Image 1 (cartoon, rainbow, N blue to C red):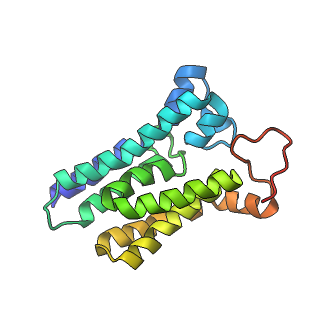
Image 2: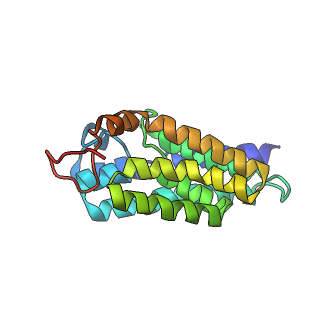
Length: 205
């Protein structure tokens, strides 16, 4: 029983490495949580630091989730499917509430992609394509992120899957919506920031 606990703790610590915060410190000597939207994630990195750092942060945040699930498989029995799921959730929790950065992190979508694509590749790809299409049409990353998070468990439920993976996806979906609650209010008010939007540009859906 000790190995799964170790795997979960390691996964949380990996998730707690906030690349958005680190890149901002290295490149601009700033705390990214005090700039742009105040979120420590890839989208705000794009807004504050530009495309290169944003792509790097996005890829590395995805890697955190994938590595966590891999560690869960490595340090658990083949029959213990809940361990990789728990490790994926731990990495997302670490990203959102990083112990290394006073528990103020991002919203966990990129790390969710990394974890879930290792647990349920096809449903994640389907949900991802739909989410990307919604972002392309509306230019609202927050809306696309929530669509992705909510669609994954729906597709898993329709397709039929391991119960641990389904419940993990449900937890992720609830967490994603809660982390985006301010964005939901802005979307309803028509004041949410658009991807690539200019200052003063109207934000209505």
